Length: 175
Image (cartoon, rainbow, N blue to C red; front, side):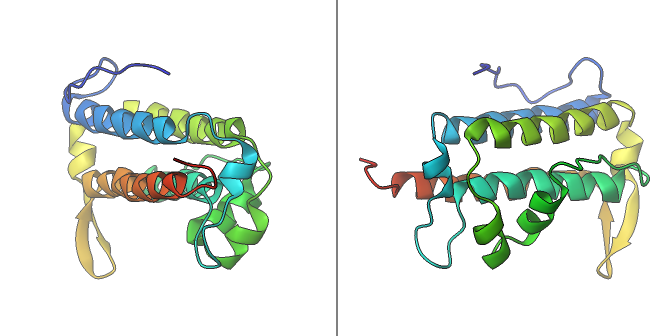
C-alpha cells in the first residue's frame, strides 16, 4: 500500500487550492483502504445485525457518492460504469436493497471501482482551477460552492470509514 506524505498542500498538475483538496482526498482514501486491507468476501458481506450495512456495501457507497458528485459538479460529464451501475445505484442509499444486492465480491472488486471513480475525479479536478472551487450554486435552498461539495465527498467517506472500522472490530473471530 502506498505510503503518503502527511502534507496538505499543492500537488503538481493541480492549481494550489485544488491540490490541497486532492491531498486531503488521497489521505482519506489511503486510510479507508488500510481499514479494509486483507478482508475476504465473507468478511466484506458480514452483517452485524438486520439493520447494518456490510463493509462491502459501505465501500460501494463511498464510490457511489463520489460518482454522484462527479455528475453534479463536472458540467454534466459523468463517468459511466455500466458493469457496476446497478450496484452503485443500490449503494447510494444503502439499506435493504444494498444488503440483498451487494454481496459475494472480493476486496479487489470494490478497490477497482473506487480506483476507477477516483481516477475520473482526479482527471476532472486537474481541468479545474481554484476559482471553480469557489463557484456557488443553490442547493436545497442554501448557497453551496464546489469546494464544499467535494469536502462533503470525503467527509462522507470518513464517516463510513469509521463504520467500517467498527464493523471490522466486530467480525466473527476479530480479537
